Length: 291
Image (cartoon, rainbow, N blue to C red; front, side, top):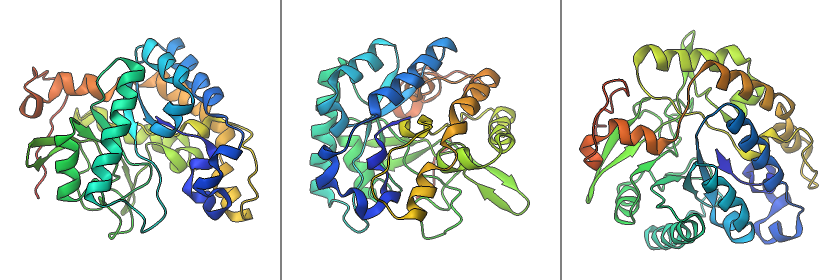
C-alpha cells in the first residue's frame, strides 16, 4: 500500500501544487490506521510504501506500521510530468529517504515504488541506482497498460529479475487479468475502486492457478469515503473520489478469500539468485526479464 495523502494524487493537478501541501489538512494517519486495523483482524502482513514527506511529518505513523510487523518500503515523491529527477537527483532522493525510513522504523528498507508510472526506475541507470543504494526490488510498473508508450508496457506480467551493474533487481509488476482481447491491470488503485470485484478476484485466481505471486496495490487515501475538496476541476474530483466508498468492503472480501504477505517475505521464499536466500517450491517462479 502507498502511504500518501489525498493531495499527493497527481490527478488533482495544479489545484494541489507541492508548495501547498503543508497548508492542507491531512487524513493520512486516519486512513492508514483503518487499513492497519483490517490487516490485524485478518492476521495479514503487508508492505507499506511510505513517502519521506509523510515520514518526516508523522514519525509515529511509521513506528506503528513497523511495530505491527509490516514491511516498510520507500514510496517516491510525485513529480510533475517531465519533471522527474536525473540520475544524480534520483540517487540522492532515494538515498536520503531510505535513511530516514530506516532510522524511524529500525529496519532495513529494500523495496521501492514510484508514486506514479515513471520511466526513471525502468531505465538502466534507475535499476543500477536502486541496486547500488541497497534496494532488492521495485514495484513501480504495470505491464498491462493499454498505452504501449507508458513505462513498463510490454514487460513480463509476472515477478521477474532485471539485470543491473551490481546484480539483479527483482521487479514486482501489478498483476492483471484478460477480458476478451484486452488485459487490464485490475489489482488495485482506480481499477479496484471502479470495476466489479469479480474482475479483481479473477486476476488473483489466475495468479493462484499459475503459482506466481501477485501484488495488490492500494493508496491509503482510497479507503477514505469522504475525501476533502481542494478546489480541483470537476472531472479531476470525480476521478479522485469515485469508488472510495466501496474500497474497505472490497478489501475485506479480498483478504477473506486470498492469503497475502509482504514483498520481503516473498523474496525470502523465492529469490535465491538475486539474494542468496533459500527457495520454496510453493512460492512460484521469478523468471529473468530480457533486456
